[in-house]
Image 1 (cartoon, rainbow, N blue to C red):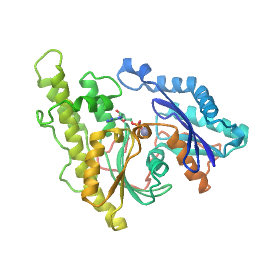
Image 2 (image 1 turned 135 degrees about the vertical axis):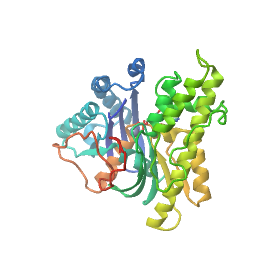
Image 3 (image 1 turned 180 degrees about the vertical axis):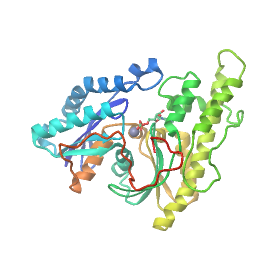
Length: 352
Ligand code: KG4
Ligand code: ZN
């Protein structure tokens, strides 16, 4: 089985070709950071135009790199949502056109399912597993019971974790995207210098909240002497923020491990996925927690944590195997929860 996967839901245009045995034949990614950087964040209009401009070239390069003809594909998968709607439409329309011209099945993949299933490609993880999904738009804990079968244990009541990293970076003038920069600076900082809050730590349940932490970072910076921030100030804010994040993730995930065991019994696998899963401090802290609880931590390699086409091709393969193809009348979805039955979390904004 060979599937072409297309990702255009945010600020990366990506196309990949993956086989049913999990071989990555091509993996093309074009990041739009340079176009968004002057604005300090992603501008949806610019993103959609950039996807449109580059998607054909990227797909051609992926097909050429894989060394296969369109007729050799078994399906074409594209992110069908959730995401910035203009970008999602570019990917969906392109995939439908290829599917129609070559008489191939079309697969609309939930972007979050792409992140969720990546470890089955990289590490052959079996269902069920506990998933901490931490990206620029989402922060959730889920029991992954099968393809298309998710039970949400917790979600953010306000900001996503990647967003909190990006905003912290912006306040410190570290540029965009912020997560990798905050992580780099945090390594040389003193995490005890600024006592930042650990929102919801010690409380029951598995929800998250990061807006208070973000505000505390703002106040911390405002209280520093006027003038440009020195390198040690920047490093200490980053280290203090990183420590707060790790404490919160450990606390919330510990509760989710209990909830997962209530559902499935015995220890199992803890998976961390999404852009923030590229963070080494986060991975190390979760590995320790998992070890203490008899769980095994599995995280995709950093390149497959942030957005990519491979995860969309792979989720397409998983769906194609189950006969879960989509009609050409599929409409791009700005919102698409993995667990549609989960009750709205109190105070949850649009991202839940
Ligand atoms: O999964 P992703 O590529 O896109 C979304 O689906 O949102 O995640 C992007 C997010 C950004 O907020 C970025 O700052 C964050 O992941 N990120 C990181 C790291 N690498 C990327 N956050 C913390 N540490 C990192 N090393
Ligand atoms: Zn993502």
